[in-house]
Structures are given as C-alpha cells and as structure tokens.
Image 1 (tube, helix red, strand yellow):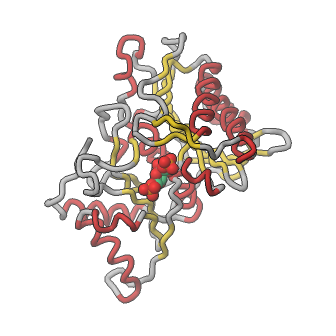
Image 2 (cartoon, rainbow, N blue to C red):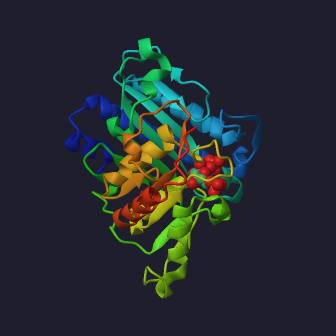
Image 3 (cartoon, helix red, strand yellow):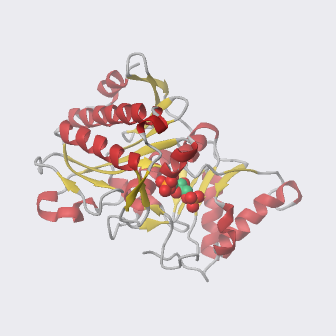
Amino acid sequence: MQLEVFLEKVSVNHGLNVLVSHLAQAGIEIAALIRQGALQGVTEKMTSTNVQGETQMKLDIRSHELAVAQLRASAVVAGVLSEEEDHPVLFETLDAPFLVSMDPLDGSSNLAINGVVGSIFSVLPNIGVSTLGEQAFLQPGQDQRAAAYLMYGPATLMVLTLGQGTHVFTLDHDSNTFMLTQQTVQIAEETSEFAINASNQRYWAPAMQRYINECLQGADGLRGRDFNMRWCASMVMDVHRILTRGGVFLYPHDCKQPVRAGRLRLLYEANPMSLLVSQAGGESIDGKQPILAIQPDSCHQRVPVLLGAKQEIQRLREYHWQDSDHPQATD
Ligand code: AFP
C-alpha cells in the first residue's frame, strides 16, 4: 500500500496528510543527495557551527534547506524549528495549523564513514505562533500530532506515527513512492540488548552504573542472562534497531558537562522518538519521568533519554528514584 493511500485510510486530517507527504518528499530529496556521497562533497565540513556549537556538515545545511522548502510548500506549516538554526523559521502562512521541529540530518558525523544517518520530525499544533513566536514550539511531547524519521540506509525508510501505532514504509526507488512494509510495530517488553556510549561510563550517575554493571555481569549476575551491546552514534539507526528487534537506547545524564542535562535535544530528537517508541509499546523517560510529559523551557533544551523495552525502562526508573543523590540536571 502506498503512503498516500495509507494516510487517506487512517487519517481524517487532510492537512496532516499533506504535511506527511511533504516530509516524505523531503526524505526522497535528501536520500538522493546522500547517495552521491563525496561526489556531492557531502562529507565536507563547513566552517560554521550550529547553535549547539557543533561543526556543521555541508549536508546538514542542504538537508535543512530541502526540508524547509518542502514544509513551506505544504502550506499547512506556520514555522519550523531546526537543529541547524538558532531560531525558528516562520513562514508567511502564520495561521497554518501545524508547527514542525526537526533534526534535518541526525548522525551526520557518520557521513564521513558512509554510515547510516536520518532525519527526525516532530509535528505540533500551531497554538498561536503569530503572537507567541518561538514560545509556541514549547509544547510537551504528548501534544504532538505526528512524529516520523527518515532512515537513509541500504533501504530508505520512513517510520511514522499519527497516534494510532507506529508504521514502517520503504522507498521504492523506481517509482519514488513509499510503500507500507510493516504496520503497527511492537517492541518486546523484555530484552537482552542495550545501546549506550560506554566511553562515558565514569561520568554516569550510580543508577546507570548499577544498571549497566548488572547487564555486563550477564548470566553470572543478578540478571541471570547475558546481554549484547550496540552503539551506532546515530539515534535513528539505534532506535530503528529497537523498533525492529527490541532493546534499550540510553543517553543518560552524565557529569562530563554537569550543567548539561544530556546530549540529545528534547523538541526534535527525544520527543518524536519517544512518541514513535511509546506508540510501539515501549517507554521513554529522562531517568525519572516520561519524556513526553516534560514541559520544555527552551527550543534547544537537552534531556537525558532512556527508551525502549518496557521492563528495562521500569527497572531504570526504579534505580534512578532510589538514586536520590544525583537529581537529574536540566539545562
Ligand atoms: P551528530 O548528529 O552530531 O552525529 O550526533 C548524533 C547524535 O545526536 C545521535 O544521533 C546519537 O545517538 C548521539 O549523538 C551520538 O553521541 P556520541 O557521539 O556521544 O556517541
């Protein structure tokens, strides 16, 4: 079934359907650029840095431009908050029904090694950006109308939720059409696979040290079974593995930069991924509370992210509540 047919079947909101179709088109254009690799100079670094102080890749900027152009063309979006811009880009259509927060190219440091990267989108209702300005983007993740990521791998995928389950679409490159290939994904409640950047181990709170040590003790320890570890340094790829075969993805608070709550951004990484995972039967917390319930303070706010298999997230929540000596910092 084609994406457009699926949307007509499951969504009565025509404007949202138009928006999702434009997100898909942005993904097709970004995928075509990435496929050209060094021939398009896409592995070149810019001299510029984004609001995070991160050096931008040429393709970060190109992906941002392609996505903004598609969202403007949709005529149903009033503005776009992007990882690549300090402030939201507001369109002429300030009364349009939706706002979009996005990471136009997540994992872009993997481009230089021809790794898997993706685009992450969060769709919110426009609650009055014409008067509120960027404050209008500061809505909790539970208010999202849709969330999606594009995954630029051996196949180009679009993983989407409109609030009734999480579904996978695969791009047919011959017809340039996304086709439904997996409907209503379910994440197993149990897992024996975790994803974390273990090089930060010495900076973790005791609760995270405890959880990971128990996993590493395997069958000889409290967990009574061996665990496997993966880390792709690409949230889209790690989350897609979890949606596909289960597991947990962990980017906890660490005291490497104590004032920084975490590495990942709430509005355009944690919230959309948390909605996709929760719609697939998983859970997502910042250590103690559901990420989707967090009231954002600022557009580029960072947050710890622990998401995936329900039973593991519940165990991590218990450990963090017991770990009262290290409250979660917020920046
Ligand atoms: P880049 O977009 O700068 O490559 O960062 C990717 C990311 O935001 C997320 O996709 C990864 O899960 C995480 O950072 C990787 O962080 P580490 O480089 O600290 O492992």
